[in-house]
Amino acid sequence: MATTPFNTNIVWDAKPIDLRYVVEAKPSTSSDWIQAEIQDNAAFYSGLDPCNTYDVRIKAVCTSGESNFSAARQVTTEGCSGPVYCNSQGENSRFEWIEKVEIGNLSNQSGDDAGYRFFDELVTPSLGVGDEISLTLTPGFLEEIYEEYWGIWIDLNQDGDFDDANENVFNSDAPSSTPIASSFILPAGGSLGQTTMRVAMKYFESSTDADRPQSCTTFEFGEVEDYQVNLVTATSTLDLEAGKNIKVFPNPFEGLLQVEGLEFNHKLRVVDVLGRTVYQLAEGNGGK
Image: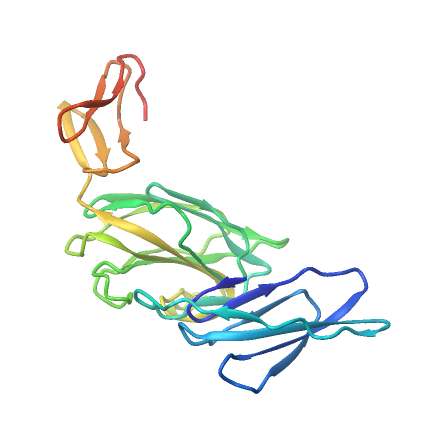
C-alpha cells in the first residue's frame, strides 16, 4: 500500500481465474462500507482525511462464483506529525508519468506511481540557498508520446504550504515530450533545514496558462512527486586562479561532499573541525 495524507493505493495479488473484484472501504470508526466493483487488482482512494485510519476488504469474482471477503486491513493516512501539504495529483498516470527527477544532487527514477508519491525514504539531498540548481526532468510514456508542462515548488519558510513569494522555483517555458534540462536560483531568505519540494508534470492540452500545473490541484493526466530536501548555506566557491572556479558543497557537510571543477593539476584535502585529514586526493586525479 502506498499512502499519503489524502490518498492510498492498494494492490493485491491476482489469480488467473479472477474476473473482477469487489472492494469495500470505510473509516474505522464507521460501520458503513462503501463498495465498488473493479477489473484490475488495484484500488486508488483519494479525498481521504490526514492522520485517519480506514478499513479495506476485498473479494474475488470468478466463473464459479465469489470468494468470501478477505479479513479487513487497516490503512492509516500520513499527516500525524509535521506539516500536511495540500493535495495534488494526476488522476490518470497510466499513459504518462514522471520517469526521472534530477535536481541538484537528487537523482530519482521512479516510473508510474498512480498519480502521486512522496519519496520520504530517500537520502535527503542538500540544496544551497542562493545557488544555481541544475535540473533534468524526464517524462515516461506507455506507448504514445505527449507534450508535458512541468513545475517545481519548495516550501522555503517551512510553514506547510507552497503559497509564499518565490516558492514556485521553476516552470517549464514550453511543453515538451523530451527531457527538460534547465536550472533555477534557489531564493535566499528562507529557513535553513529540512523541508518539502514538489515536482508536478501535467499533460499539455492547449496554450492557456490554466494548463500549467499548480501546486495544489488535481488534474486529469500526469503525476506529482514530493521530496524532502535540506536547505543549506550557499555553495563555497574558491577562485584559485583567473577563470578557474572550484565548487564545494554543502559546507559544512555530513556524509556526502561534492566538489566540482577540479583539474588534473589540482590536489584536494578535506579536514574535520579538529583539523584532521579525513580525505585526500592526489595530484593528477582531477574531475568531479
